[in-house]
Length: 519
Image (cartoon, rainbow, N blue to C red; front, top):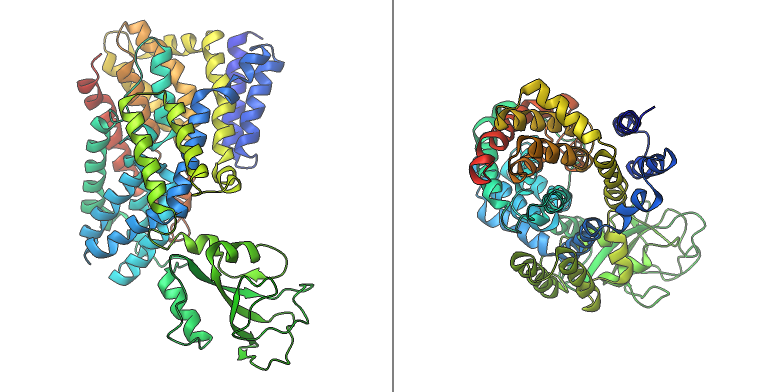
């Protein structure tokens, strides 16, 4: 079996593994790297080169910076601006939400922005009397458009920028993506506002979110906590916990007003079977519920062990506090990173490493939080698939596919070749990770451009646009999956709104991109 056939076989098996959803993405990616080495297609250094690639390191640093913004309430503050500036109408809310999630996505990634704003959008929809199903899919799809506003919007942008440099062209600038991102965002919002009401279902969600203020008032009412007691703020919070079997708290005396055994938290209420326990002689039993108050850090620390089962994770609740402790430092670090990326004073990976280091040194995140914030699945996925991209080049597979593609569409029109590359990318992008798709397609697009003797820049920018057009299924991207349950969506709901947007992205990629980045 020749090297080209082996490479294509590994690709097909990887795609089937991705589509099955039974094998973890990281395992598939590592399997790809190992297969390339064991079959002799790449040597060991080439097969593992992805794990030391600057692109992979830069992507990891962006997760740390995004966590700093999220955990300090910067994204919550941005989300709450929807409540004050979005109005009460469906169209105005869709525009404000779309612009907001696009701006956040450009800085902290699609998944981070959607995860941060999803509960806020559910609350906004409920207050406006709008079904969440009318708001949440537009949230995810606007984030996809927003990913094209800056280099940091998605790993795909970083990949195509590095691919351009490897092909002998230049890297794309930090804001250069906005030349195509702004039209995509405007077009996406227009489709969502004008057609969304007819293309999206009016459906009740299977789960509802509740904002921090509402949760605090619910606890105050249910447990008869005095109105003068502040439950949540920038420094302190509240947690509702359950005493599980075998908890070391069983048999201890805890009653409202006293401190917990650690001395870090204060007991606000104790219930058994829905009734108050206020007698100091009562001892805790399995199934008793407590409301605890204290500093956010202490709440997270003392509710993460085996003593209690927490009803609402304080670490998650804290993110809903707008502009909490460390918000200014996190924002300052972000602005410096953006300045470094925009001016090109240092390589992108250096700017990312400086920013990730700064949020730890300034106390915004602990080292443990920084490590935990990285989506290691994404990191391993990119690192493991980079060698497959290398194999496409060194084995000549990219040349074979590019030649077959040009034989099919002819060599007389660069636009037609670009259309074929974009269509293939979009089809793969509905089935497997768009990051993996772009890693596979980048060497093919580069060879096609070289064979046509045209600039590689329009091909790679169009590739990024096509990679962002993952709209037709809930499994195309994690952001699409996130809104599935809260929006009450079904699998077939996605293509109805997704198809017009996919056609929009295809038209922009094939017709508009070459006007900005000339062949």
